[in-house]
Length: 128
Image (spheres, rainbow, N blue to C red):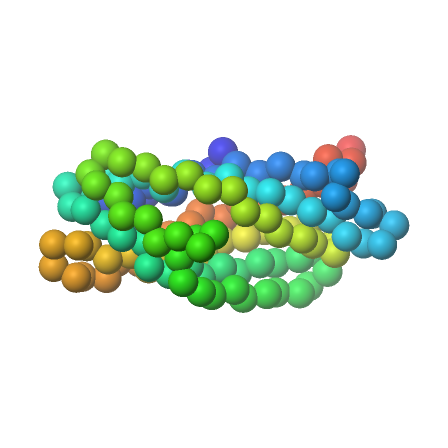
């Protein structure tokens, strides 16, 4: 698990390779990532946007930006957390992702950048 705290918000990430949805012969490798977002600050915050950088070992970089996460813009009171699962496909079986969330403090509307820590996605047989 990879974890980082920015502006009082803790983001933790775990990844998993999905061999049943992948096809190494066709250079198609599917991963899921489970993200936990915990509000460790004293303010209520709302997640507004996400911005991802996805690097594949074949030297391609994709950038993904949009509202919320998996169709939600969760509001987190102090001490609350939100968890979701999403996925990514790679062509090489080896890659990394990182990025940030744009969050807003509800009390005053101040926008905060919250880092999503860099994490790797590796097909298990690439580790041998």
